[in-house]
Length: 64
Image (cartoon, rainbow, N blue to C red; front, side):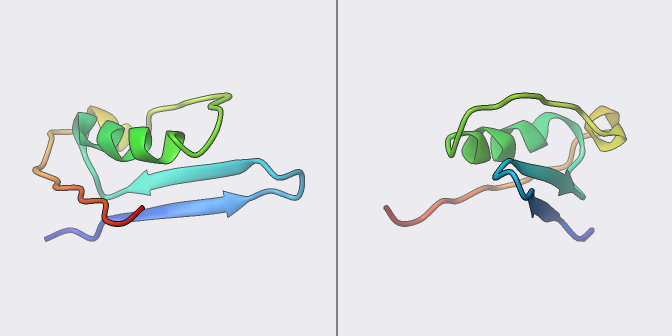
């Protein structure tokens, strides 16, 4: 199984950027929707992986 990760960068001005890696196709949008609940989205871009064949990804959020 290919590694899947989220790279998160907090910029000096407080903005947050993230890149989802190892998730192909529209499955990354499920993860993005979760992260976007944390604040206002100013810009969104799809990587090359978005346009690749999809793989099954299960996302579970526990707590709160």
